[in-house]
Every structure is written in structure tokens, then in C-alpha cells.
Length: 124
Image 1 (cartoon, rainbow, N blue to C red):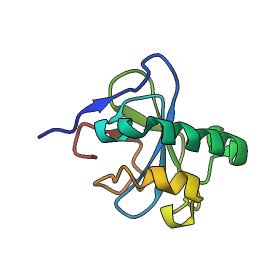
Image 2 (image 1 turned 30 degrees about the vertical axis):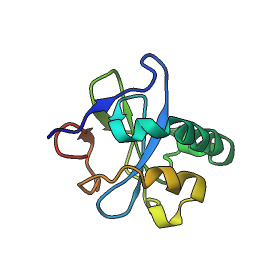
Image 3 (image 1 turned 60 degrees about the horizontal axis):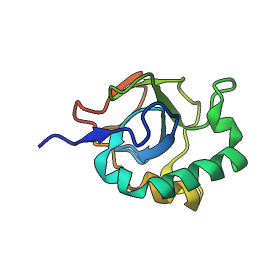
């Protein structure tokens, strides 16, 4: 059965996190997420608020953030990478505020140097 993917607030930006198959932290912005994560939107919003205050560089493209960061341009579950970090952050090195919500979504593949993630093609 295919994973249901949905945006919690169509038309509004939102950031969420996942962990890839190799344990790296992945930040995804602006698009749909796996349905089970939507039961935790308040937790995700709190994590995003924490990150905006404590890790503002994660939301910039220059310089590249120290994590795998992707964004979506629309409602389709297609995310494009911002760039490849030199030393990507592992979930185990992330603060509890982020790690707790990232652990809710386990990607089935390693991000590596992938430039496009199509969530509906076996990633979740």
C-alpha cells in the first residue's frame, strides 16, 4: 500500500525533518509529508520554531546548512536539494528538539548525493 502524502497547510511554508537510511538528518521544506507525521504537526512546528531561533543557518542556502536540505515547489511530493554539505549532520548529533520529530519519519533510502527526492517513489 502506498504511503499517503499530504501538506498540513496548503499554501503555507512549513519545515519538517526525517532521518535517512544511513542515519543522516534531512530537512524538507514547503511540501507534503507522510500522513503519520501530520498527527504531530504541533511538535514539528515547535521544532521549526526552535531551529529558527537556535539554528538560523539551516534556513539559508549560502552558506550551505550542515544538513541535507531539500525544498518542494508545490503540492507534488518532489523535493530538490539545496546543495551537498561537506560534513552532514547525523540524527544522533542533532538537538533533542529536532531529533525527536525527525525520528518520526524514517526514509527507506540514503540521501547521499541525491539531488531529487520523490517521496512517492519508495522513499517512505
